[in-house]
Image (cartoon, rainbow, N blue to C red; front, top):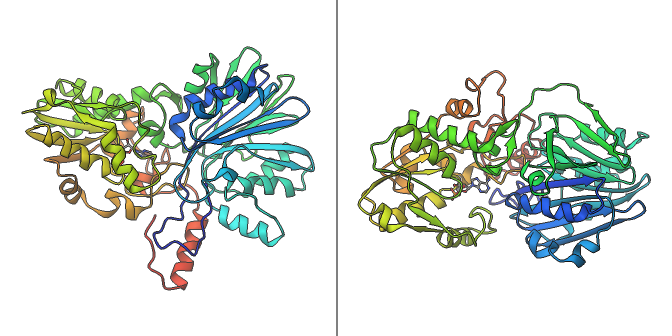
Length: 491
Ligand code: AMP
C-alpha cells in the first residue's frame, strides 16, 4: 500500500492500489531460487516490482527490481547474490505514487533485536493515522508503504520477544495482512484476525514454505500442508521447529470472496476449496438464475473461462472460444493509467469471427469493474457479426471499493457504483445484462447462502459491508467535510 497526500485527493484516489503476492521458505539450501520460482507462480498478483531477501545465518541480502520476476531473477548471478537457507519475497503492483524502488518489498530494517525483513500482502486501513502518530514521535519513514508502519511499531515495542513485539504491533493495525517475516532466529508468517488475504503453508523435504497461493507450492514441488488460519502466527526456527500462536483469540473468519471470483489462479486451493470448481459453480448458478435464449456461450478469456464452462454445462448451450486472447499482454486491469488500460483490452482480445458471426451469444466474464473491458468486448462481438450479445457476469455488481489489498477502485469509478442495472446494460451496449446473486455466489463456494448476521466471507466490494473499521477513510471524509470539499462516496 502507498500513502498519498491526504490533501491531494481531488480525484478521490488516495486509496491504496496494491495487489501482491508473498512467498517464504526456510530450511532449503537453494532458498532464493525456490523463492524466485514461487514468486513467478504468483506473478498474476502483482507485476510492477519484485524483491527477494535471503539470510545465510550471519547476513541478510536483498535484491529488488521493477518489472516481472523473470526480468529480475532468471540469471544464476541474480540468485547467487542471495545466499542462505532462508528467503522471502514479494511481487507487487500499485497504480499511483510510490511505485519507485523504495517501496519494493521485502522491506528491511536493522532493529535493536537484529535484522528484520517483511513482505506484506494486504492493506492497513489505519496506516495513515498510525504513521502520523509515529512521525510525531520522531519516526523517520524511508518509504511510502504502509508495511513500514509495521516495522516502526515492531521497532518501538517494549515487549521482549520478537513474537510479542510483532503481536503488539499487529494489535494496533486494522485491515488485511498476510505477512512473511524474517529475523536472524527464523521465519514467521502471520494472517490478520479475519484472514482476509490468503496465506498457505507447505513442505519441501525439511523446508517449510509459505505462499499467498498453493500454485506457488506446486511450482517448486512442495506439498501443500494447510492454510495459515485467520489470526494465526506461525513461527519456524532454523532447526525446523514450528510453533503456532493465535494471539487474537478466535474471531470469525472473513476471507476475501473475490479470490474465488477473480484474483487467485484457478489451479489454487483457497479457503479449502478449488478456485476452479468455485468459478465453474458460479457459472452454473448464473445459468440457473439468469438463463438466456442464445446459440453459444463465449468466455471472456482467461478470467471468464471456468464460469463459462459451468454456464454451458448447466444450460446445455455449446461452449465456444469466440474470443482469442494474446498471452503476451498482462492482465488488462493491471495497467497504470486509463489510456494504457484501454489499449490493453485491444491488444489482449480478438474476435474469432468464424465462430460468432450471425450468432446470438452469451458472453461470460468474472466481473465488471469500470466497464472498460465489457464495453470493448461487446463492441468487438458486434463488429465480428454477432446477432445478439448477452452479457452474464460471474459475480454480483462490484459497487464498492476494496480497502484490503485488491485493486478495486472507489465507488465513483465503478460502473455499478455509478449506475443501476439498466444504465449499465446501456453503457456496455449489450442486448441484456445480468449478474449472479450474492447468495448464488455463496452457494457456488459450497455454502447454503450468505449468512447476513455473520457473513462467511469478506464481500465488501459487492455489499459495502466492511468487516473492519476504515479509519483512514473516515478521517479523510471528516477532513473533506471540514474543508467543505465534495465528499467522495467511496464506501
Ligand atoms: P473493467 O474493464 O474495469 O470492467 O475490468 C474488468 C475486468 O478486470 C474483469 O473482467 C476482470 O477480469 C478484471 N478484474 C476485476 N477485478 C480486478 C482487480 N481487482 N484487479 C485486476 N483485474 C481485475
